[in-house]
Amino acid sequence: MNGPLISAAELAAELAAGSQVVLADVRWALTGPSGRPDYEAGHLPGARWVDLESELTTHGPTGGRHPLPDPEVFQAAMRRLGVSASTPVIAYDGATSLAASRLWWLLTDAGHQDVRVLDGGFAAWEAAGSPIETGPGPGPADGDFVGRPGQRAAVNAAGVLALLDEGSGSPRSSSTDITRVDVRAADRYAGENETMDPIAGHIPGALSRPSTENLTASGQFKPPAEITERFADIDGEPVFYCGSGITAAHTLLALESAGRTGAIYPGSWSDWITDPDRPRTTGPSA
Image (cartoon, rainbow, N blue to C red):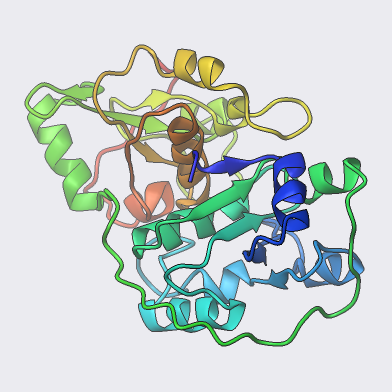
């Protein structure tokens, strides 16, 4: 596998050559209706739809707005898609890869070795004039994927607190050389326009690197050189967080497309603020 992204042209060529892949449609909107109607209106041939809210998330009293899914629920969903250990998986969403990055992270964290994201999503596929199917899509497949979550670097709230203690609130911890990076919009980071969570602000010492700046105007990821430049001032492996973990995975995907890696805080800001003793601050990035 060459990197975590695949272009519409590359995918079309692989499919034309007879490559056997699992196509997972993860169309989703944070505040919108289900993506299922969009899927049925048009999707990649053979793709199966994945429900981010019920299959890639376990809603509960802890863990923020999008806690990681129950491992058994996630494994069953992947088997329904037809995922096996040796089957390449291509995830896509409408255009931005935000939702697709969630599936990419979960599958690779569970031990799958060949997962890519369609750069630019369905919009890029459609713009290329590639074939589209409509309707409810194929029925459940019979994959035998066995998930083993925990293969990726992830940090919980206690881990972030430990970094704060070691680094005295600075962006980097001198003992571990880890930088905390907030990938929400700059105004949400600053605490000026919080519309999703009940408390505004950011984790003390975190740098601001909005995830929207990973993408071109067309919704595709910027070239690796530009992604590298975005994070050139960060040594070591950054820890990304956002509102609920989804755009954190998106920025990690961008970073890995440029040959670097890092960790995410899956619960992110919506989890951090559930404990009033955890420090928080407002204001622009230093």
